[in-house]
Image (cartoon, rainbow, N blue to C red; front, side, top):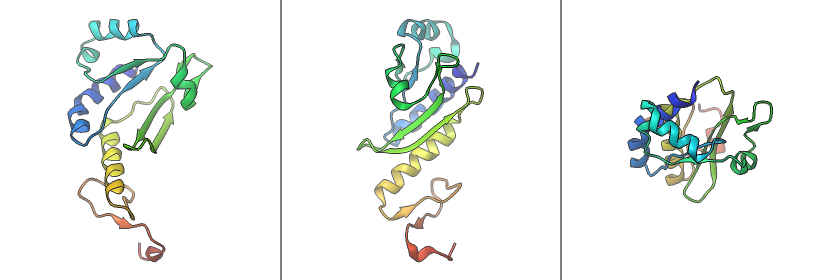
Length: 143
């Protein structure tokens, strides 16, 4: 049961996400009453401060294409949008594999960096503070 572990880890990183101007939200096909029960009964989920959105009519999961009719659940998905609503990252994977809040934070910081520095890109395995590279044809053969 991966969900509670992801929600708990996202909560641990929530302050850092807020520091870089990001908002965290979770969405599930459960109702708000199920979320309330989990919040009240689970030590892990009881600490969650960010919005836990209920999507029992599958409006969001259908819109983003994450609904799995085979089990009636949404696949594990992560979306990063910039302040203008432009999709910067999308990841959908199997429900048996948990996601890393640390990696999500790195991707948010990278998306913020390239937004603030047009013409620059964050290379593979980039970490905040690492060198970036110019997004230019002039870089061909120099990497």
